[in-house]
Image 1 (cartoon, rainbow, N blue to C red):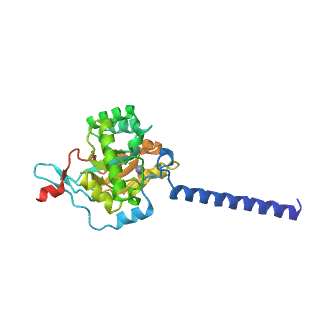
Image 2: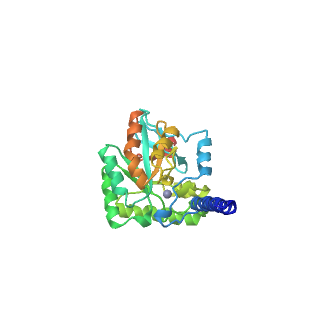
Image 3: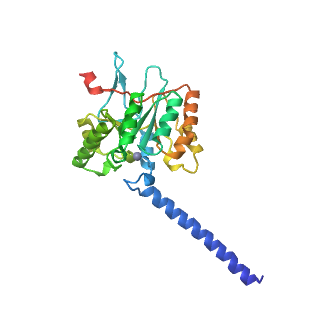
Length: 281
Ligand SMILES: [Zn+2]
């Protein structure tokens, strides 16, 4: 091969590689910065870097109290990321973005392992079948909360829009699963001052998280779900964020095994919390 031809071939190959790298970068970037709120396949989980830093930099945890009668008192209008119990051995598995094709598998894994979880469901995904299934899940000791009507970022909305979304989703989800909704988790962790006011007004506790598995981003690297949980430092009372995804189903037994090995019980959020404000008065 003539040196000139060889040079052309080499440079073409380098050009192609560069193009692939650039296209990859653009696609990945576009995927993390935009998300269609209505299509489950394009949902990008509930965390972003900014949110993550905010959570990790927070120095004063939201105080939670257990009354003498044993009722768990939670603050309304605050972002709850940890609910300690007296034995210091409890953590909370939470699953966002359902219900869908993985709901029954996740429920079955929890059941087989004798643990419970809390699910945050998007109203427009709850079919009759899944609504009935949700009712059974609750009767078996799990908890279902609201993840809004259509997975919209509440932090971008005004008070009226959020009032409409949160009140309607609590009402409709409650009707579909036959249980009162007392918890909500804001999609993308996106909140503003109105979110707290509106949620407090309708008596809904806002559930955040202390440990982020980043499972939604790990379809091609499920093992990292477990290492994320390990490295995020699970503490007594930690609320752990996961999603109803294929990779989560795959890793859930190992996550449960790991948490057990650290001495933790996995329970659902308190079924009937009482407002902390009422305890003080
Ligand atoms: Zn979500």
